[in-house]
Length: 72
Image 1 (cartoon, one colour):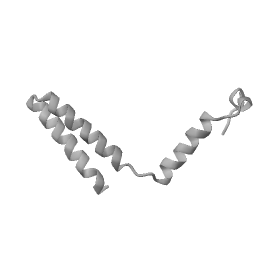
Image 2 (cartoon, rainbow, N blue to C red):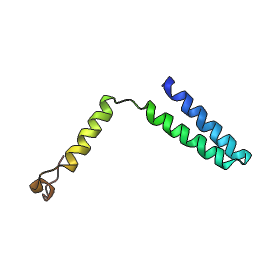
Image 3 (tube, one colour):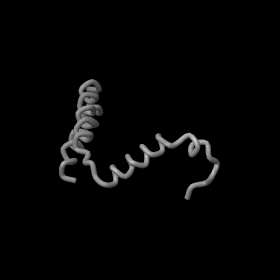
Image 4 (tube, rainbow, N blue to C red):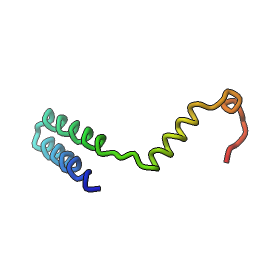
């Protein structure tokens, strides 16, 4: 959690700069905040499980994709 404090502070600075009226600088700060948050993402078990589900849904056999059966 502590590795996300920096990007949050950058985002707050972006909003503050936008309120002052410097929209170009605010946009740059917002991009830095998004990049920092992206780099701080960790590949945990939840993310890996979600990736497996998405992968399996995108690679269904043709017969399973055309099935009308309800999967529970």
